[in-house]
Length: 114
Length: 136
Image 1 (cartoon, rainbow over the protein chains, first blue to last red):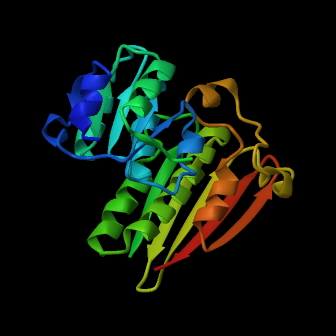
Image 2 (cartoon, each protein chain N blue to C red):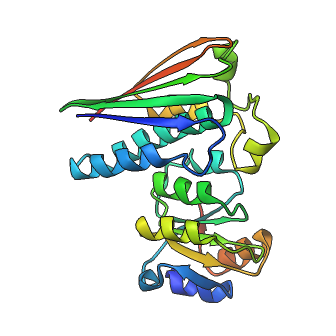
Image 3 (spheres, rainbow over the protein chains, first blue to last red):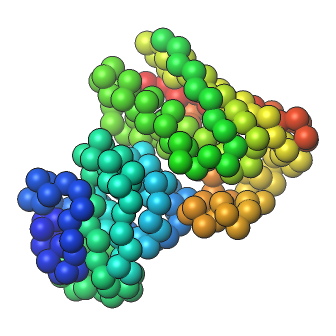
């Protein structure tokens, strides 16, 4: 799925990386636990999370994850957006819950990792 | 090439800075992407361990043509039983650490998974040394 399609499905605002919305991601992973995200061997994925802090951005950076959706209407801080920008990450913010966001993206064709 | 960094216990804002710098250097050296990911994930996990559990620490990274050696040393409570700490799911992390998205007892097992060689030495109430080596 293109990132712009994901943003549309999730009624999301784009707070970082608006120039990268034509990029494709194949899979999604929903977790508030960064320890689990760091165990993934896959990298062409979007992280869907309600954990809104700098470590979510750092985790994406280390795990070569290019896009993050923050759910439950949570907003990234300026410091997070700055760090995401330095690393070329896309940040989307959705008003939907983690469950609803994951369900809508699964229905739209985004694949699970396992 | 040698890089050194300091880490403060409890400082989650800067956790990941050393890993980020190491990643930039490795990218410039045109190391394979998968190898870089293994290295920086291992270092990041080790950094988070220091921030989560110790009082302060240092990261020393040495890169030569064939390998990267990363030494993460801390002054902290130490690990009484390293074999137990290596078990997936075993954790002594605080509520604060868990709220940051860590502390699930996955750190040391994940470091093991992402490194070619791993050596851990620890002394209770003194600190812990974690040495990680990855070959290019």
